[in-house]
Length: 105
Image (cartoon, rainbow, N blue to C red; front, side, top):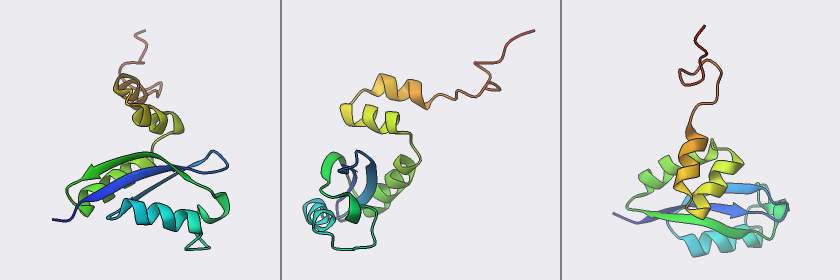
């Protein structure tokens, strides 16, 4: 199987972009060159690699990309710092109806 990466880029406007690829270096160069002028990063260059993680397959990397895209900025930053304790806290449901937040009458 071919290795793949999920990555988070920090854009010049401080926003984050999440993607996956089988060639991380080439993909980063493409983002910074404006390879696709319609892409999210094209108008937010330069971009820098903020986080990456290697997977054993593109399927695994794509699943992680989908998950990370739904995360808050704080969760992405905790992941990049390796702050797994905070990541766990941020992953907990904060909804008032969640059983941990339910006030017993």
